[in-house]
Length: 202
Image 1 (cartoon, rainbow, N blue to C red):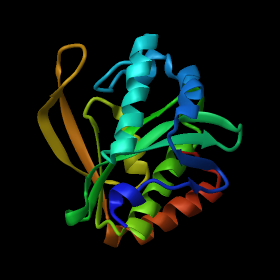
Image 2: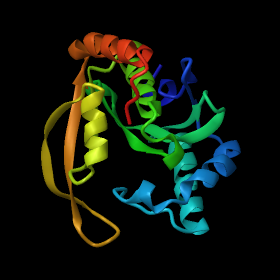
Image 3: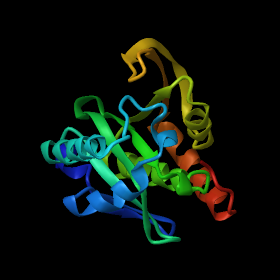
């Protein structure tokens, strides 16, 4: 089955559930989206109702077209929607994809939710889709995201200068990270053992 059809699935463990976005998720995501701290390093901002509607509509459109596989994150500890993440830049001939477009409500940051989201997405990418490379990118200034990527075992590759414009007018330097198929078994084991030990990661 092609990636743009097989990338979307119900992914879950005892900590989090990731399900493909639907219209039914609009209200729950809206409740946690209006905090400027979430969007500081995003290429777009969600500050008004119109911003959110545009952002959410883009998720639905990308999901429908196969451009992205957009997931809604549910924290099983509380039963609440915690945020979202996506597969994008799907390059099936190269067996390469990106995990990104990720955000969590501030109440769910620093509590291990991000670790399990990345774990489930990487497991699906490598074990089901057959990816050889999973990549991530973030703003070079986003120290929290960079620490989180290092903590899940991603390898820091380098900076692409002036990569894209940001809403405040500067051009973002994007820093890339990756995990390769050969590295996944040891990273999977590390994430599983650390998570069971109760060590949260942003």
